[in-house]
Length: 238
Image (cartoon, rainbow, N blue to C red):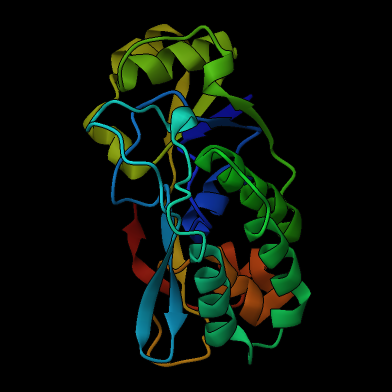
């Protein structure tokens, strides 16, 4: 049993799906602190002028007061949906596989979600299906595990009877290896070397939303995530 744990992001990047694909179970970390101005409510797309964020406005609460699962989508300006849809269409309408995915993405954007988590998960499910990733998932909020950072991760692993925990490289900074060894749980670190593929515009810019790859490569996208028949950047991405 190999598990990985990650906060749900909005239209996540390639490394997010690579990490899920190499696990048996993806634990959706939904009951930890929401992080402002990060990738939980936004991500980047490649445009003719560089990069651009597509963002979901959220209800602002006092700092450090909201768990991810409780963050609500703001209704102050409903035009954000059409802006995101237009930005994606403008950036990718000339991509080879644009018509394979755009209508489904647009349909999700136009749904009436109250919570950011629900929207993000709808996108993640659809994108996993598009990539043919069949990893199962479970919400951390449905578990009894508690603790902070490394302790929380260890307790989740114990509760799910994990044999291996797949961590991001940054886990080296806060995971206690001895505690995992005592629990009989192996830690492996995801080594994701970003593939260099042909985008609509040059030069190549890494770390875009997965939709950048899907629009350009369609059903070949998963192979590219795994570095098959494409050059790779030399650094390991977090």
